[in-house]
Image (cartoon, rainbow, N blue to C red; front, side):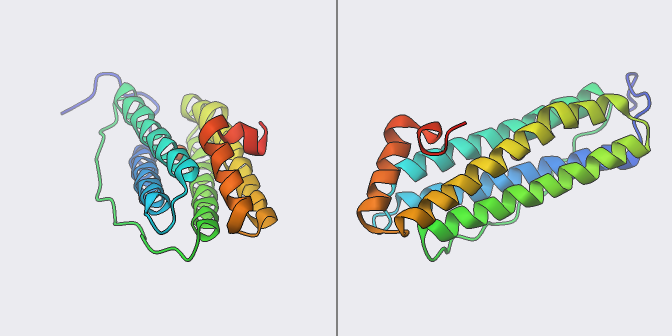
Length: 179
Ligand SMILES: [Fe+2]
């Protein structure tokens, strides 16, 4: 199938879009796993469960935006295998720390794709990456980093953790970390 729309869209950039779609889906899967961990009876943190379920949804939306973009540019969407995420964490704090690392990995990948787009003079894609994806990624990293700090503050267990989780559940993440 040949695209009529394709213009100034390098095949390495097209491949990178598919890789990023896969990475966003890996993030979605990982957040579903973290949400399930938080909801287990031995963990019982409904605020964190809700937060990570919402994060999973956001990651799916990122993948969807990139799929739509790939089609708009005349590229071909290739859905790849999503490996099973870890489902073993030592603690809620440990799970949130792994989410922070994941967001940093996603950011690294987006930065790599942005320079690839620039290298191929793909102004449209570079602009979308900068104005939407990289901007949001910096926000997510800061948000999750603050969640880790709050978890460190409350000592990762006991009444402090209960109160932190309840605030997350009832008032949302901005009540815990600001904007
Ligand atoms: Fe994302």
